[in-house]
Length: 476
Ligand SMILES: C[S@@+](CC[C@H](N)C(=O)[O-])C[C@H]1O[C@@H](n2cnc3c(N)ncnc32)[C@H](O)[C@@H]1O
Image (cartoon, rainbow, N blue to C red; front, side, top):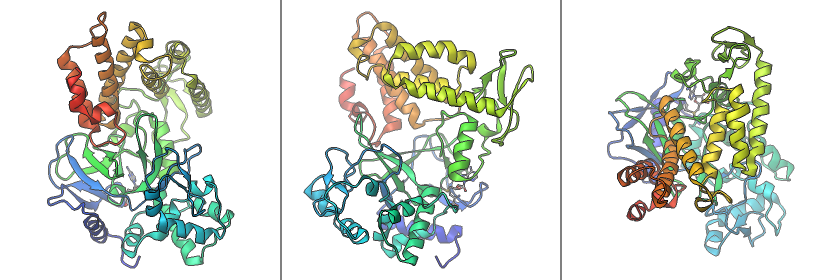
């Protein structure tokens, strides 16, 4: 990169990229500017309505994630249905002749770099392949990558170490470029889910304009990915002209210390948004524990400090941070042991031991409720025909409680709200099907589905009923 990274040089590079991808808007509602968060950010150039599309973006680099247990998928279409080893023996998975054609340049590159061929899918190669794809970018796209923010430090670029250990050789400038790509990906890449229902592929994509959105735990932007991995970025609440557009880099249903830990570890900054500045998290107390002394709420003693001890709001008894960390670890492992999908055990823990230890909206409670919502109505033994009215009512109540929590957390028309509204819709519809139960009238049922569909529109992962809403409406 020869020129300095300024609002004007980055704007030029981003606009050129969007133009080349046919994504330039006639009167775009955004412009880049200096952010108070540091660096560059994206700002509204006019008032924006909630739900309005703000921009579309295309991935300059996209490919597999390095996370463990990520199922192998086709390198060209990203579907994970029956990929087979590429017949050219490059070691990567491909699913059809059409995809093989699309994968040709990459296949040549990987064979050349490896110096050896293999007739089976090399899962390690697949997993660390994404940065290598950047070697296929043209000069213009390389320039886009060069103008994006990057993280420095030893933890970034481990993919290149892994590829070298697998026998790949890189000249010095090439290795430097690849390591920079890794640092750029770590600072900016999005998790991209492709597919729906029980067939997901999990990718990471570098979206140049999306990369310039800074973070807030009270975000005013949300995004979905369409079937071509195009990012559709929308306002999730009303935005005033001049306001910075932010999305969340952390899960909204994490409490502040968990979000802070994630942001510091992966993005190297401490968020100071209104939610992080409020130890009570807008009254939700999502990270608070129950005081053993007086049953009051135990919250972190110091804001913005991962090493802070904790203190009871009422009796001021202090709790060492190690004790809180141990409790979180124990609760976390109990929750992950619940993958056996036995709702009765989960419910007993939820209303018993867990509630004695943590607040009603604690992130562990939310996590468990969230699990229960996705089991009832969907998983074996708990399909709609298997469950009684009590379980159906329970699912409806949990959906409503979680939707209330999203309101308290000021999360607007976020994706999680769309998904919960859809689950609530399913409960209402099932209630209507059962003669014994009226959970809502037809107008309420249709309006719940419409609200869900408005949020999840264009999302390739949205439930089929949301994608075919007009068809679904006929069934109400
Ligand atoms: C994806 S980039 C966002 C765009 C970036 N500001 C730029 O100049 O390109 C992510 C980086 O921006 C900075 N950042 C984003 N949100 C922030 C926030 N709320 N507070 C402080 N820094 C933030 C951090 O350095 C973070 O690692």
